[in-house]
Structure formats: C-alpha cells, structure tokens
Length: 296
Image 1 (tube, helix red, strand yellow):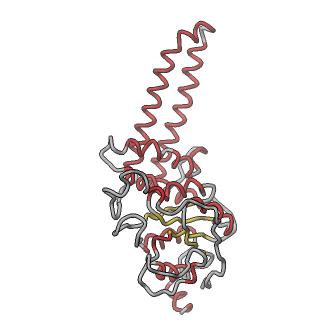
Image 2 (cartoon, one colour; image 1 turned 180 degrees about the horizontal axis):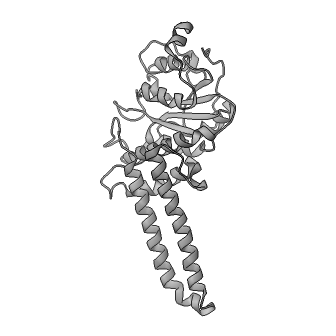
Image 3 (tube, one colour; image 1 turned 30 degrees about the vertical axis):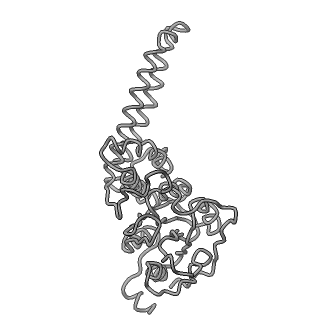
C-alpha cells in the first residue's frame, strides 16, 4: 500500500493567481451549472464549424489576391491554392482522426494530434461559438475535456516515463471553515469526513505510485509538476481551470475530472470519486479484492 506522502508543495509567495480567477469575469457567477454532463460531440461539432469557416476564409482571401499573384507569375495563384488545400486537408484529416480516436478508443491520429495541447488550443474559439450552438461556454469546455481525455486514454499506453501519477486537487474541495493547511501538506487532513478530501486520500492509499497536491491557483501548476516530476497528471477542477491546466501539462499524459458546484463556483465543491478512481486506473493497475484484504 502506498504510504502517506511526506512531500510538501510550497507555493510561490509572489503568485497572484488563485482558484476561481476564471470565474471573476462579468456575470460569471450567474447562470452557473452545479454539475455538467456533456458528451464530446458538442466540441467536435464546433471544431468542424471552425475548420469549415477557416477554409472558406482562405478561399475568399485567395480569390481576392489571385489577380495580384498572377501579375508576378501565372502559376503562382495555382501554387498558393494547392498549398492552402494541402494544409486544410491535413487539418481535416487530423480532425477526422480526433473523432475516430474519441469514439473508438484507438489511437487514430496524425502526429500533430498526439498531444492534448493541440485539442485544447481549439477551446477558446469553440467557446465563442457556444452561444450560437445554444450552449454555455462551460458546457463547451466540459465537452472539450471529454475529447482530451479520450485522446489521452488512447495514446497514454505508448508514453514511457518513470515517476508517480500526480493528482492535483483544488482547494475549494476543502470546507471554508477548515483550518488544516492542505495546500502545504495534503496529509495534514484530519479525515473528519466533512469534505471529499478524506475519501480521496483513502483512494490514494489503495494504489502504488500515486501522489496528491492541493493547489491555490492555476499558475502554480508548472512548479508543482516540476516538484513531483510525474509520469502522468490527473487534474480535478471546474472546466475553466481544467482547460488551462491540461494545456500547461500536456507534454505528459493528462486527464481532467470536472468537479461539482452545488453551492456555486469555488465553494464546498465535490467530485465523483468513482470517476477519479477510473482516471487513476488509466495509469495505475487496480488492486484485486484479495490484495485489498491482504493490505487490511
């Protein structure tokens, strides 16, 4: 059984980014959804629209400059059109690969798509399309996390690196009234059972090579990842934080687990521990019932 971690994660005193900063924009605290369930199709549809729009803009741009290009060389407009066509075709094939990977669980990606970073880069414009598709930005982000997770599930097997599996937890899982310094040392939790942290720590102890850290904000993620140097990362947060975190650590396999916000963002949040367990077992083999009895 993995013993309690003695590692402490120090937070940079100059850090000014805190959990909840993505919710500080105007109107962010109105109309929030306590828990979001959205499949990958919404994000994939938005990406398809973006690709089609980009292709149309390219054709329009080419049409407007073709006469000027022809003045330099009669073959230049055709060459530019062919070059643009090759690029758009590659992007479209990459898009088809992401769709196939998401729904089959097999790695069917071109080299560009082997990082979650590529997928997450598309979230910002996709979120702007959310209203046109009759959805919220957070629902779009949740869908994007589902796609990113599917890509990770399909490609993580080929990623060979030593180190632990790092689970990053938001401080808002802790009760606001609790005085235990979990950010400094997650094992300082008294396991009173009044927040999900005790159950999460119990889950950690069922697996070897799993470490956990509680964060104050998204900007400390790089330093925490460097501290533990993990082979894979699992982030628990709201969709807004997950998108940023996945982008930052996407050079490693990364999975996102969206939290639940029954009292609103950044306060007494919760999570589906079964979903977190499934994420851990993507990278760490589960223990059998016999092994559990032996450990007890």
